Length: 335
Image 1 (cartoon, rainbow, N blue to C red):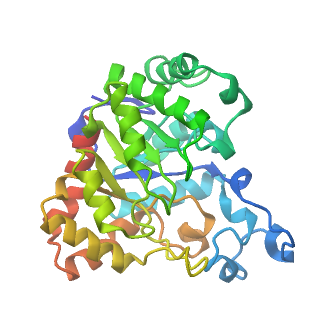
Image 2: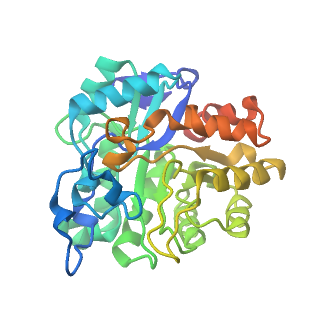
Image 3: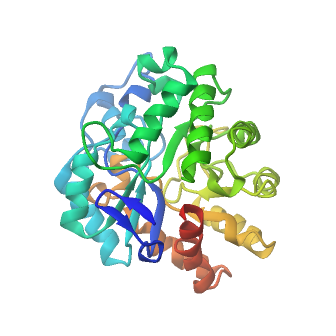
């Protein structure tokens, strides 16, 4: 059985699932304020100024905030309209997890919502993470999964997204160790946020598996910003899942920090599928910016069911295989 914000459902009822999204999120505490910020840095995102974030997504601070219930509801209804049935929301408390609002959204839209638990990367950590023991952090995750989040009876259905930095900090290692312990106990899968440009997936896998987690319950996220086929293959050979979760993000922050383009992601995806790795790959958008919502000119949660699906089938991935990435693969990861 799978735990959603409305209770338990059978794994077969997941249907088309976006494996890693954010419906409400506040990443503003993770954005480095420029030394000499442009005047528009503190503006609200609008259709008129969204051009400022097409290269650097954090050129306007407000782009890092999703907090409007009615807008979120409309975005979920677009997802549902195009065949989406379930969203896994990987938002930790530090950046805006809101279980009561998620329950209300699920009730009003009919979209299954699965919440995560744990802590994000060190820049966002609550102060108590620095002093908490691994055991205390594990107790917190265990309660979220078995009893309920905060003062609610709404339970987490997955662990994560657990955050890590380019060099994994001691506090992040504590959270990973706790996640490994609770994952091994409960059988829940774990999503791990990795630095976009380094290759720390192996260290993450080692920490989690040493605590008893099975590789097939681990997903290494964000492997599709800088495309490194050999790195991704080596992760897959460890038996874990990897996630292409940046569809819709084609930023050119700098020459060394360029995000891959969606079509480039598709080409690597096809290569890996042809090599026999298709059953261990997840696909989603990881929406975490205002300008990714349709209201602000983005493609929305349904992007993986529209343009991405079209690109995949136009470039040699048959529709059945593509759809298995967002149905069977997610089901197998979660069950």
